[in-house]
Length: 104
Image (tube, rainbow, N blue to C red):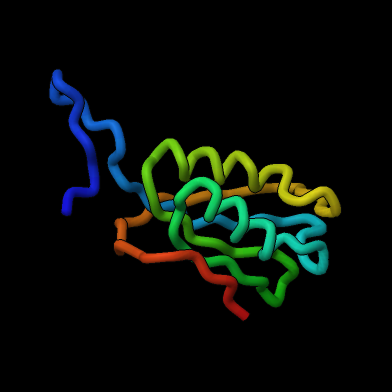
């Protein structure tokens, strides 16, 4: 199974990508993880999300580049009760995750 689709002129349109994301601000205790899972499922993005001891949220997103980009953009706002101060991302090699989970 291919991770990408080629158009008639050979351009790749759905190449999978992976982003490791850290979100800081008031992002714990505001349904950020559950909302991230819902947003990921709506976009067809695989991965996971969890709270960190330092108050940040950490997540990994894998999927079509446009869907992952959209989810990273969503992270800048998050759910209505969140107050996001910063979002940092790093590109990583794709590991072919399947599904999306909230980790504890």
